[in-house]
Length: 101
Image 1 (cartoon, rainbow, N blue to C red):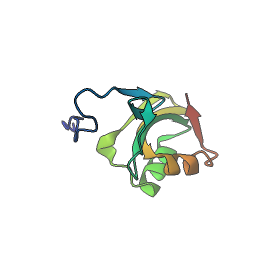
Image 2: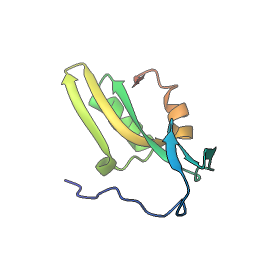
Image 3: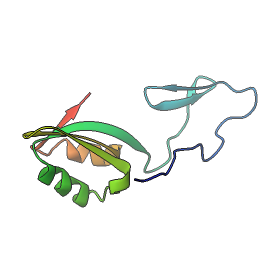
Image 4: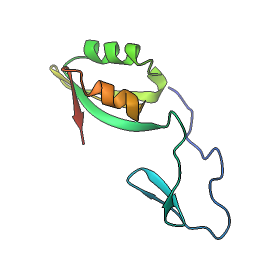
């Protein structure tokens, strides 16, 4: 099991500033800040088999330690993984993948 923990890597606000996150976008003093290039989000999706999930993870170079898969029944697999927004837009074109909200 991967025992890595998520933690804050840098300070993005100064004392006295108002920081909030709205729809995955960080705002400081009610102004959105620029997101770093390659920023990743977690996405939940359904696929028909572990074989399809393995194919997607291999193509997009997903670190197996940073993903979760759950076999719901013999025909359906739920996956949650981190992807950049650009990668996720490409993933939505896969006929074997069904994004979940």
